[in-house]
Length: 193
Image (cartoon, rainbow, N blue to C red; front, side):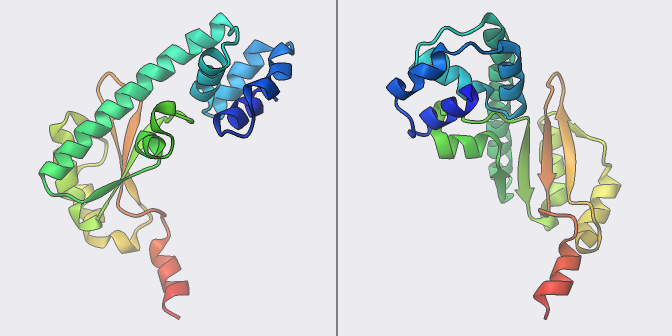
C-alpha cells in the first residue's frame, strides 16, 4: 500500500496530507524495497518519500537506490552516444521505452527505472547500425555474416533484434529491426485479406 501511495502522490492523485496515515504505518522495509525494485519503481518511491514527503527512509533503501541511479545515468549517457553516432551516420532510429521515454513522459522524475536500451532501426540499416555501434565500443554475439543474413531476409525469420553490451556495464542495448518476431505471419494472415 505504501508503494501505491507513492505512485498516486507522484501522479498528483493524492495530497501530502492524504499520505500522512500511510507514512505512520509500520512497514517491512525489506519487503517494500524488494517490491519497489521488482516493479522498477524504486526511484519513484525514493523521490517521493525522501524528497517530497520528507519521510524517514531506511538506510537499506538508500543503499539500494544508489546503484540504480548510477545505472540510469550510464544508460542515459549511452543513449546520448548512440543518438549522436546514428544521427551522424544518417541512420534513422527510434528509442523504444527506457530512459528516453521516461524523460519525455516524466521529465527528471524517472517514474520507472530501466534495465536496458531498445533502439528500433529500419531492416536495411542493420549492417550500418552494427558498424556504428561497434565503433562506440559495443559488442554483439551476432557476426556480420549473421546480421547480413537477417538484413536480407528479415521478413521470413523470427529473429527481431541483436543484443549489444558495453564493457564494464551491466546493461544491454537491443537493436530491433522489427517489433515482434512473427511479423511476416501476421501480415500474411491479417493484412493481406
